[in-house]
Image (cartoon, rainbow, N blue to C red; front, side, top):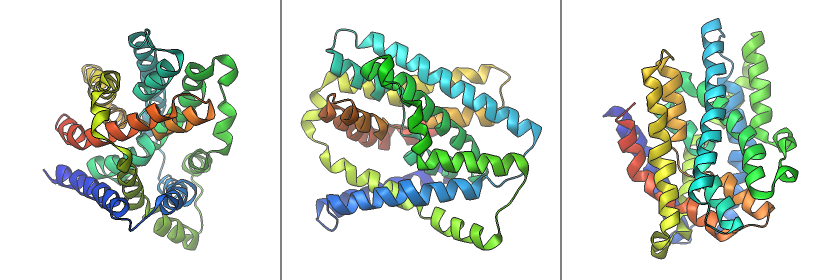
Length: 296
């Protein structure tokens, strides 16, 4: 029940963000500014600070498993979704496939992992997000535009991935940053959860009742929020550590990734459909995520 209350607190932050935009306390420019603050400063700071944790052979093996399972899960989800939406136009098929395939594991996954499994589990989510970005800019981009669209070089300019690389270096070597710098990172990183949830809530302003009439979008939400996370639970039947399975499960249970909306603009696909999918799945996750937590 304590974990459920923590997650409901996160959703309350989302509602606050929605209310701020609805009642014009914050405009689109302000939301974009907060989004930039989270992406370029708060989230990288949190990652870099939290990855300065003692390494052990067991933990390293666990993280390798997380990376492998994430790539496998996203790849399998992409193949399944691509077949399900085979009769759609090329643009809609690409968007619907990517919406189903990748989750909002960075923005929403980090806060939920911390609330559910504790701050020590954040490193599992960090590795999940690293694999997510790899798959998003390779397989995900492939669905949008074929082999020429695959852009793994995009990883080199992603602030969070740069922080992951630096943090994993500190994690594996045992090196530590000066205390005053870590204090600054901790203070900045502490703003990640409230700001990220606030921004997610603000984005829900684009949701309309008619979005519920798009049956294919509803199928996407079922796949993204229920079916694909449930597939992860089958790993409980294997000897894999519970922390590994739980972390991959929770990150997979998040709504559609904002990355899909960004890539839709980049590849000139159905941008409106992508935005609707992200908004609708995020709204529905306020129901599904607390329910899925009962299975952790």
